[in-house]
Amino acid sequence: MTDRPQPRAWFAVTAVALGTFTLVTNELLPIGLLSAMSRDLHVSEGIAGTMITIPGIVAAIAAPTLTVAAGRLDRRLVLLIMSVLFTAADVLGAVAPNFAVMLIARFLLGLGVGGFWAIGASIGGRLVRASGAAKATAIIFSGVSIAGVIGVPAGAFIGGAFGWRTAFLVTAALGLLSFLLQLVLLPKLGVEHAVTWRVLASVLRGRNARLGLIATLLVVIGQFAAYTYVAPFLEQEAGAGAQLVSVLLLVYGIAGIIGNFAIVGALSRRLFGGVAIVIALIVLSAVAMPLLGTWLPAVFVIAAVWGLAYGALPIAMQTWVFTSDETAPEGGSALYISAFQISIAGGSLLGGRIVDAVGIPSSMFAGAILAAAALVALTFFRQKHSAGVEFDQQIPSAMASSERAPLTGGLGQS
Image (cartoon, rainbow, N blue to C red; front, side):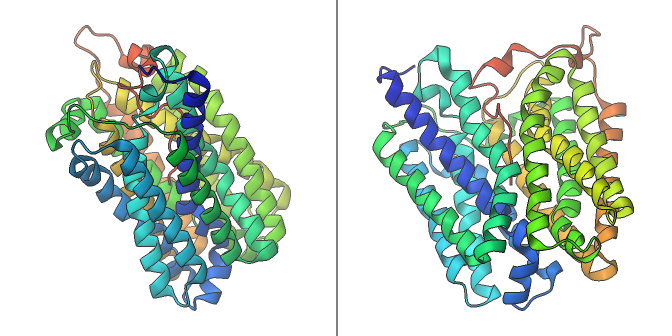
């Protein structure tokens, strides 16, 4: 609980939300600009996909490592340092003369993403009164969800109209604004009990949580193996220009926002059913795009369905991981973030290798297979509680707690 004036406290929450929006937009920005960036930096589209891989790998390592390394350091200072890192990364990326410099920029971005994401996930309840903790956390991570589904099409639009370097500068400006707002609005955020590796790993004690992390790895790898190369596919196979691609990605984004909020009701009624529907729609979308993607009306429908499903995916999987067992271990957020980031990196890397070897459609089929494997794993290996009641028949009260479910509102991503 905080004694700060509540209007100022909610502005502080918004400042952190802008930070989460900016960092996820940064991480996914090259997806909508891949073709132009690969041409200007003189690399193949498959190699260019490592611009998603590098920050994902770095963030996956940085999330738990920086959380533990921060010890009892003022969390306000940690967030400010991370904001400086991902803002500097954008500026360096905007002026990068070659692909090597761009990868250095993406490495710095990964540090900022991992550190900010891990710390920012848990501070919502510390900025406002206890009664507003869940809402504050939801606002912070709605920034992540909206960035994941809006940041890419917005970046594609700016890049198509003014060049991809301008898109990087715009996100740098957002990062700077977020830094300034945090500097002015955030209070000191001391820590009484430092997070340890034992605390971070405690989430693995629950069988369903372990299964959720494995399923997250599979479905998100599949998602990014397929979706990272949607823009080049639409340009090459459907003959869509840059402006039309940005419109299609905007359709995907709007549908994603709807999915992010619509899934909450389904999860509250039956967790497994909601998660299963989300993953199944991702599988169907990844298969349908290469099969029907040359017919423009079908592409609009597929983009909408795919966006709806992916917009719901982060909150669906984080809900599974943090509520599927009888307890939700403190500190598990960093481990979930690592799983998600590893998946983004692995998906874009896998997709890139497949694209260079056998073409873009094959990367989408591969993504669908991986997502289907996640659905099979959840269907056949989820565990009942000792009382014999299926855990997915109810959402435990942990979802209402900012400490027990620090990722309410979704992830991105990245």
